Amino acid sequence: MDTYSKSYDALSPKERSRLLRRHALHCKYAKAVELYADTDMPLGNIAGACGVSAGGLGSYLRRYWRELVLRRHGIGTDGGDPLAVKIIQAGGQSTVAHAKYKDAVAACDSLDYIDLNVSQIARKYGLDGTALANFMRVHYPEALVRREELRRKLGVNDNVWHGARKVCVDQYADAVELYRSTDMTVAEIAERCKVSESGLSQHLRFYHKDVLTGKRRVRAAAKTGQKAYGRILGNGRKYQPSVKTETKYAEALNLYRTTALTMKEIVSRTGVPKEGFRFYLHKWHKELVLERLGVSGDVDGHADLRSARRRMKPTAAKYEPAIESLRQRPRPTAKVAAEFGLNADVFREYLRRHNPELLCRKDIVHMDNGKNVSLSCKERYAEAIRLYATTGEALRSIAERLGLVYKTVDGFVRRNYPEAVARHNELIKCPGVQKDNNN
Image 1 (cartoon, one colour):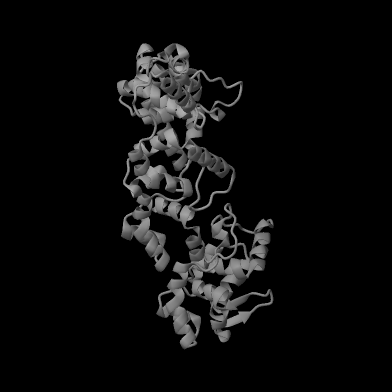
Image 2 (cartoon, rainbow, N blue to C red; image 1 turned 30 degrees about the vertical axis):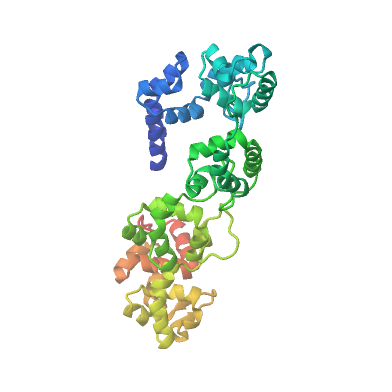
């Protein structure tokens, strides 16, 4: 228990949250898994008995208990990874459906039952006639064609039209052409053409198997290629955010693109979740993120953007009024910083990086170590630097005694006087020199 507690405490909050969600998921489906493993109840009946959705239970079993699903379908793993075994191949039939309909399919293809129609044969085997006919249309269409031709020759046909009716062909013609020539999904095409999604899907499976075969080849090729925005994926969907997601972040995205507001300010105004918006930007609008960070050129997907960034858009907007004022009326940067409520050292450092031509030369001193520092800062911190380099007293103690801001003088010394830091460290290592733990 102690070992478990230590391991759990070592996890980050995000990892703990993920662990707790997974535990709750396993608890939710525990009874359903037990029934699925110990009984022959259909999945839908198990879901109803346990008060869970059939789709959710099916997804859970295929992900976490795939060996049970394979066993129920009579599929072996041959010692391999169960997750790598396909339960139903694309366009194929499941072992359960094959076992259910195989005798009836054989009867439909036999001369012994040529005088019976498909519905009559289905009833002999305790099956639904429509279900058997649909199963054969998808997996054995040639058997149905042979059967109807033979029955017509023998004069035992039932004079009922078989195959796609002209009204259905005309109804789905435009939808089929869109599915053949574009990357639109069945749902998108059904909505555009104002037809039934399930009806279009069934029409394609029954009468346009060549189109579905071509789509499967495209999806198989997409699994091995690199993902590209708007291109089809292996599951048939386009690699792009959903309409719901785009609508949700539309206002925040517009502010991010057209203003210099920070991420915190944008999510506060629009009410969207901060982490969700950040993920949305980095996944679908990486070019805007790079533009705001001032990053140019190709950036690897695993690169640290914090180290690659240059001139950030919010930071540039923050200093823009002060820079424009300094450009129109040159004067010491410390005065400009005071006028606009900025930190003088930080403002000076920003100018040194991005607008060095605006620095007043009389305010800058070039030192022997190659550093350019502010004359006023050098004079203000001269005594603190001398004491720090020649004694073992901590810099925090020196700053407090001289009335200086510790963080400011500490940053100034470490940036511009590394030799003073080195001499101080050597002094506190020497015996007889008093050390201060605040250093």
